[in-house]
Length: 223
Image (cartoon, rainbow, N blue to C red; front, side, top):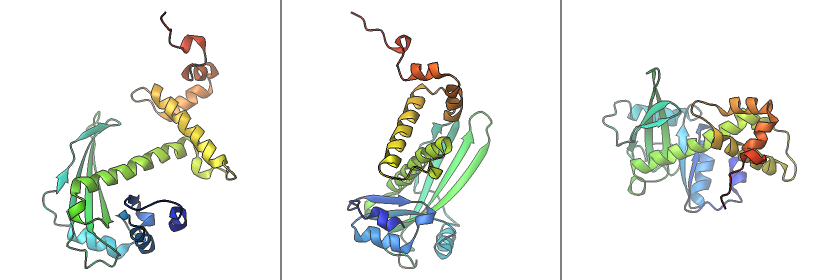
């Protein structure tokens, strides 16, 4: 399904990221034939690939790169990555340049609750043109996009939208993104978009204020 969607895209020289559902041999072949590189998450739908990468990194030492801890959404997050090209000739997957393991540690700032997550992956980019820092950044970029889609789906149930004809889907998505952008510009720390939407649903005047459509919401122009 993904290959027809990419048919009209200029892929040459680009890095194509995908979650585990799209970690498929045919898609990997297609991306590389188009002169691009893939970066795939590896999970249970590729059991042999997952097992081999997990086994290699089971006794891992110091990480190849550690990202500076960041504070986001009330959590302090630290990401580390381990990379290897030792499995390139062993894995039954096309055009492997490196395999990697990413570990994300998170600490809730208010409660101190600690959590850890490990992600396995494979990329067609060899180590000489994709250092560990770059691979970690590419992975982070993929999930940043996923987070934006999650907000649209969570707040507008976009995945189940029945608007499917003509330019309707594109137009409604643009309007939803515009609405989210407006809400985010007024969002206060600790306030969710869903809570803001519920509040605004009961206060039409406040909506007009947010959109700068009332006289008291416009900035005063000094003569």
